[in-house]
Structure formats: C-alpha cells, structure tokens
Image 1 (cartoon, rainbow, N blue to C red):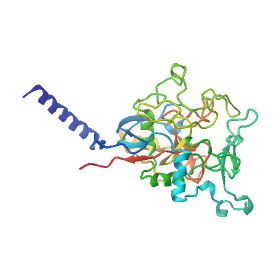
Image 2: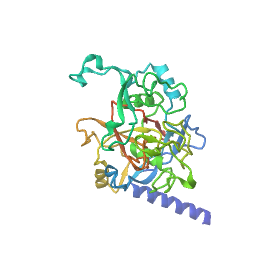
Image 3: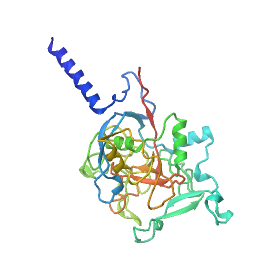
Image 4: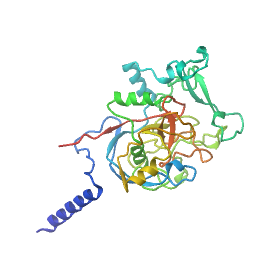
Length: 343
C-alpha cells in the first residue's frame, strides 16, 4: 500500500472517530462552486468556549463548550439603505411607528399614547451609573427614519446601521431576505472570528498598535464622549477592520438582536446538560429577575455607548438583553442563512 493511500485511510479513520466522539455528522460546507449569498460571509462550524469570566457579567458564566454548524452571516449590520428597500417593498410599519396600545398602558391619557422610541440623551453632568433613566428618554416621533426624533433623518446615514427596530421588525426583515436572526451561540462563534478564549474578537489588546478596532465610548460616560475613535454616534458599517472570518462590527457600533429568549441561568443549565452543547437555541421562555414578566430576547455585540466604565459588553462573550417590543438609538441587527444539506 502506498504511503499516500495509507495516510488517506488514516485521515478518514480519524475523521470517523471524531464524528463519533462529537455524536453527530459535521455541518455541511459550501461547495467550491457555490456563490456566497449577496453581502454574506461563511462562518465555519466548530467548537468554541462560550461566555466570559468578566466579574461584572454573571449571566455570561460559566464559560462552557459549544458546537455550532456552519452558516452564512451578513458581512455587516443591516443598513438604513437596505431596511428602506424592505419597507418600500413590504409596506412594513415598525413597532416604533405604531400608536401605543392602551391595554398595555392603563391609566395613560390617550393623547400620550403616540408613536415613538427610546433615545440616548446625555446628561449635562455626572450622574449615578445605577440609574440608566438618567440618559434614556422616550421621544415621540423617534423611529428608524428619525433616530433622534422628528427633526432628524437618515438621508446622510444610508450606510449606517438601521436602529429603533424591535424584535419583530428585525425578524420580519430577515424572513423577507430568506434568512433568520442568529442564535446567540452563532453570534459569538462569528464574533470570535476563529480566535478562542481571547478577550476581544481581534486578540487580547483593546487597541493593538494604538488603533481602534470598534466604535465604542471614549471619555466620561454618559455625559462626555470625546469621539477619539472618530465617531460619537453610530458609524457607517464596515468603518473598522474585519475579524478573522471577514465580518465587520460584531463588537461595538450597535447592539444586535439574537433569536434566543433571555435568562440569566442559560449557561449554567447548558453546562449541566452536556459536556458540549450542540447548536443551542436558548431556553423556551424568558425571565429577567430585574424585570419579571417582561419578555426579553438576547442582544449581542455592545454598542457605541459601551465603555470600560459602564457595560463593556463589546467583548465577544458578553451578553445583553432587551424587551421584544422596544427599539433604541443603539440597537440594530443582521441576518444569517443556513447552508442547505447536500445529498
């Protein structure tokens, strides 16, 4: 038997043993002749350590082993230009553009139940970081078309990520393009860019060679943003270098919706159930002890409002959460698509 054939047989045997150890077939891979869906990048399947040991992120612990199948992911966040095409084609009206339902706000005068959304409003001076209402306000008329309120628009921000999208708005867009929202395991796999157990999606230094790698907050939060990274609000998509998978802005710029319901005990349950959790889709329901009864989905990636003084959840293992009926000035999304199985 030739050396080449022997090595091939050994490699095949090793692959079979690996499949048996993992308990499943590996995920399908795109063929050499298959074109990538427009604007998307292939994220290869594999195992990784999910979560973070950051002390102030208890809901992202314990760090545990996870496997996800490969998938296609949007190279960047969905932009205002892309979302406008969706709205023009479907006549979709976002949650922020609809009047508030009186049943959800008992006792509120009808004239106050006007469409709007939650806008970042930096205070004039220092405030307690325990009171997030000190820098957030409900602005009537704020929406994806008018991010800061009726007097603002997105005419000069076509390539910025769309914001003020509630969960159902993001899910509707992804369905329109034939995709879906990512699970949080898929998002973290993508955000790590092939680097395992690194603090950031590009390594262990926040500013390698003194260069910013993400749109985050510099200065004193929440009242003074120096904009040293070039932006004090959202940045155009792909303003910073891509990660190892060729994906942009999975850290900072805007938070991004994931399909999983949020619970702080998700990771503990996953670790207890299996040595390696395969293709997790999250719990069956939502529970946030800070707001019991408010259904929330996971958000990932952090935003331009994250800093080392507050939040810092732009690390790939960090988790966020948000009420499914709410959008904000720092919340967007991107879509994924599955690789069809080959026969």
